[in-house]
Image (cartoon, rainbow, N blue to C red; front, side, top):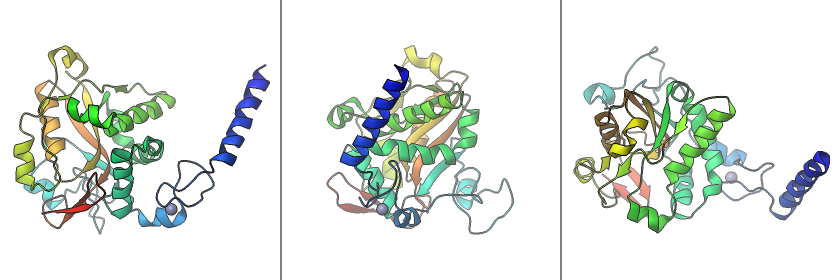
Length: 271
Ligand SMILES: [Zn+2]
């Protein structure tokens, strides 16, 4: 019976591949296996590897030795301990994030979370729980799912498959303020916009108090969102907070241009 069931599953998998051949998540071209990008798209992504700033995960051009911090991290120490990102927020990364967020491409979650799992190995090994950056309930209702919670759920599943005990706590942090979209706002405006936006409900404090929290989000731009969420988690007694995102902007949001793809597919320059 087990052979029959297994055989049936294999046959169904073969049939599915025949009917829906795997396509590249980046360009839609044919690829040999699902949850993959083609060689051209792979080259178009900038995976973040050491050497990088140990606090902000900003890649360095030269290896300056372990524990070296970027000028950004020294000038303005972040409220969280460490930030890691799988890729730089370039054209293809932006396209993947926008596809997940605005075009309901939850099928991209295994691919994106897989890369995050690799980039955040150290953070995941030390964390007690995963807390995704929440959406306000009105936005969640409109979008139907929280992309960060989907990434967090997958990261927790990957950890469990390795025998880990990471707890996914998608309701521990809530967005109590319906903030306007961050797109088009300067860093200062983003910080004002997010003041008092996050909160750990008293009933959920037990999930955070004394814990090492891994905050998960899709993109890190100016750090305003991660900062506000970290402060709320610390107010609720988190022992430490690390941040793991799919993509981060290269300039740290302090200078240079940041571009975001909006839900209409157009691009806007952030200054
Ligand atoms: Zn491709």
